[in-house]
Length: 303
Image 1 (tube, helix red, strand yellow):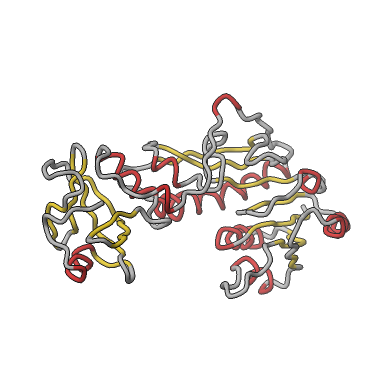
Image 2 (tube, one colour; image 1 turned 180 degrees about the vertical axis):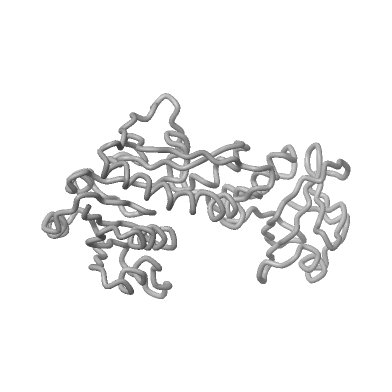
């Protein structure tokens, strides 16, 4: 099949290289326009390295972009991490249509921060979907889904990089095979089960130490490494990472109970969390190192 790929960043690059490694015919690569001062997109660099036609249209609504795409006669479009809006009419140009990766079990967690929110909400599983996109946000029939467990100490980083990223690349290849073999299903999403969350931003991840300790633990994990759950310590904003439940109680909510080599223990409603790393004015460091540099000691209140 003649495959066009639309994507960006490391995931887009990995999908491209996986397709090429097994001999797929990739006829063009589309990625977002360059941003001044930003690092080159890894997908762009990979496309150039493999001497593939590279296109970076500022909009997929341009008639000239459509015509150039039609002239390529694509059989299938693969979307691997896309943030630009691509109209349904453009998606329908390839003979077999377009398939897209989304890191959640659609229709749950539609939206741009679909890995953060399941962790923050305390879910014990999430997953990925390969679907047939339309003009809606993460809408369109499902081709396949894969489920992963969210462990007690999993973070945004571990769920994505250790689970959903590599599994997503494999799922893309599996989906291409299903399309080629004429066996790719189109399972309508159950709209009665849909959820949507917007970007997980700084304003969403300020820690309220009066909340139950499990909620705080989940918030820190779901924002680790980005956007970084934060609190106020000695008048300054501090981001907290690598949270663990201690299983112990004691201390007023927000009180730093102890500081040691294994981290900084902070009390919350009904329990305590141990924080292994923190970031104040400088970079991310061991929590004990941060505490020493910031003049923080047991008894200091957070928030």
